[in-house]
Image (cartoon, rainbow, N blue to C red; front, side, top):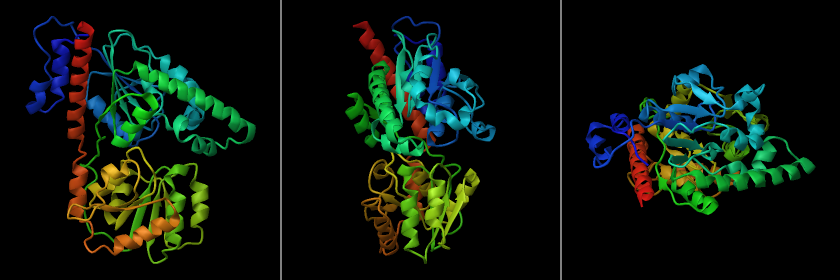
Length: 414
């Protein structure tokens, strides 16, 4: 496999000047006239951590063509990512796709394989569902940035069924279908030349589920937007996420019912909202504010004494956004949080872990946090978040593309 001088100039132009020399290929062999790059994402629906990765992928490869199953992202959210149009699959034309897409998981493997990427030399997929399952031809190089193996099919089947109200015989049929999707997910990994993952936690899942090794490259945090300002309110705690079962927002609410002298602000919406609202009913110290704009998140993060996080996430971008605002994190000691929060005593401490996601464990962690002899400082939290700056992500991405491409080319020549 080869790449042109023009293509490498395009790649090099996205790298800081001090790194540009490191991405030049060998000049001792003829190269094709150009490199064509495709960036494939699962879908474009709402802004979140995965979309920040998409933004950086498109910035690193400004001439790439963007592909997605469908694009229904609100204009304001999309403007923060890219003005580049996306080539979409037949799912774009399904009526009500914006509200129905999560229930259409069974057709997504067919839809992703309907995208025609035959004209491209380099394929970069940003995958948390099916994007890595695109059809590839001989001679293409496919790098997958894996946010997670498809959790609906592997370790979140019960949550998926509960979120969609699937019970009884329908649940039995759905489990069979999800098992088939899991088999497809595993087999489609063969079309990936190089896996890059967002955390060591996900890297272990890629090894276990796909039998593949990977390189860890943590996703970017928007540290230019999320910045410290003002002072923290001593009785105020905040949590924010999409309200689905595995986020355990209900457990956080229950914990703060047992802490009536502390305030909890809950930000976000989702299928669990009514149940969370019911759990908070009658508790004057708990406020559910629903979805708020990014400026609203920024304001609450800056004011909170700590951010509370009870999910076992693959990575978890929101706790780092809080830390970028100088706010410590009280988190479940599992999953990606172990890589983004520094919970050990010391001057660089940024938070505290609790051992399980029960309400009692969360409530005790809040008490323990307040009793710390040396509390996490705003400067330590900010410094920790800066390790995940977008520039570092882009530098690492370009290094992995370069190294993977050159390795694939060398193997093809043997």
